[in-house]
Length: 301
Ligand SMILES: Nc1nc2c(ncn2[C@@H]2O[C@H](COP(=O)(O)OP(=O)(O)O)[C@@H](O)[C@H]2O)c(=O)[nH]1
Ligand SMILES: [Mg+2]
Ligand SMILES: [Zn+2]
Image (cartoon, rainbow, N blue to C red; front, top):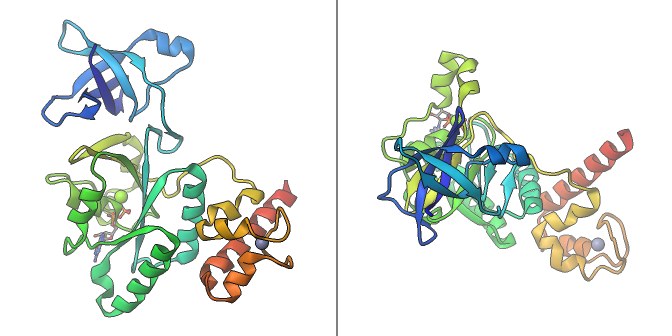
């Protein structure tokens, strides 16, 4: 029986892209499918990104018969089998906010997704090449992949498209950082609304949108995530926070006290590394800030 991936879900239909030998095959047409009633009875709901077994029905449509187990499942946007989170931050308009970037990174580390940081709107900061290079280096040293793009000039977009080949990715970032503009660059012929247009048309437009995987070529699919600004993941405990700062992890194992908070303990390797300049001020500051925020929240409930 044929296998495929659900690339769109709309009004009770699932749009399935056939798989050949486990790979999405570009030449095959999408099959419009219904899902078996059994899913509903089991309380299961097929998701965009699900790998499925389907059969063809007489009317040229198909039927989703079985779901393969999921490797991952995001709640918002509701997409299965995402492996990569593409974190978009503009260098200008709005200005780069490292605190927010670190917050997104904490959530992504916690989710276990792989991630790429994309700094967008490079054309707006031509005079600040050094500032951008500094941020890029800061995060690369920690072990993150960083790309710099401009949807105005097109720079960096082909490199990103190649990087996303063969995976299901989600684009994450605040509204206005240029997610739709970049997707329009990646997919020839695509014309997602960008914020200028949607502001003119009013907000209501966004609400009827559905989740869809966009084919960006070479087996790469990106979840279009209208109106979502933050990935929602399970609640994070304060004791899990330091593990979400990648560069702290190998050091934390050498702290004198088990369960070290890295805030004031003697013999703390993280504090030592920060004092020696091996951990950046901004990263350590944000760690402290998030730690205290989480503590405060806990106290309030
Ligand atoms: N100068 C410049 N403006 C951009 C770039 N990318 C997006 N924009 C503008 O930024 C605004 C928000 O872009 P949009 O793609 O809608 O952002 P989204 O909300 O993240 O999807 C729009 O006015 C775009 O024209 C870029 O690379 N350079
Ligand atoms: Mg958008
Ligand atoms: Zn410590």
